[in-house]
Image 1 (cartoon, rainbow, N blue to C red):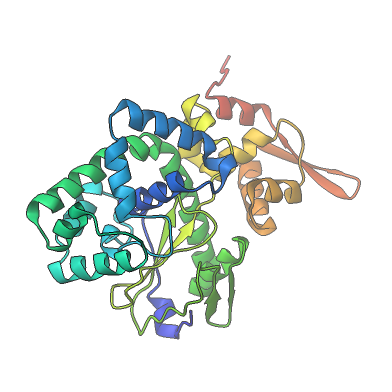
Image 2: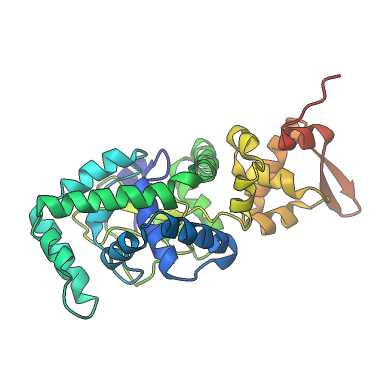
Length: 331
């Protein structure tokens, strides 16, 4: 993807995760075995919840419309970082009939067997079929996404803070260079390369590109297939293994909302002293980003950094432990 100076100036970072992108991508994760360390426990928990709720048939129907493959319809993800589910559903259910038909025909070209009756009526823009789709997406989201929104939003807020710091320090190019910390991403001299699932050149043609963080996006970014639609680039937030257990146990959710998920995770890991490179590797961050997190925590009195030979080791302070655990002894 190449950027002109005007396109760089128009770059936009979404204000948070988009509920319909998260819904679609979580459906993909239920169909594959990607990132088992990060999402294995989530798959098991959601699978059990869907069975208890009687939503397994509904979910199967949604996976036929949103398969984990080379294509799923753009109309399922109409937002550009909308943070409200109902706003996204209103946009989805207002999709013009010609788009519904074209995208479902395209979907069927990537599958085998006859088009299910439900998809045929949806392609015709049948109001009852659209209503059923909205109801199904709302019910699935309530079970598979909504219970995890605290962890999801904390991770997105932390990512947005990092992007904002990059813009303040180095402008729009600094924002794009910051994506170099993601595997396979590289920005140099107006060109962004990313590990998209297929070979593709995304042309902005002077339009605003919206960068959308996605919790359930794994490794590769995603974009809308129809290049006439407003361009978005969805990128992974890459939650660390154990996020679900921490959120379920109460973990460090309050402090994550205060200082960000990555910094809370950094504090949690400092049960033993670690170098900046250790932290960067454990959190899958660029060393410069890990160093910046450590600096912020050190200035807040939550960790100490001490030189030991040629290494600098970071230690959690008593205050850091108290903040992490949500307990302060003021006596």
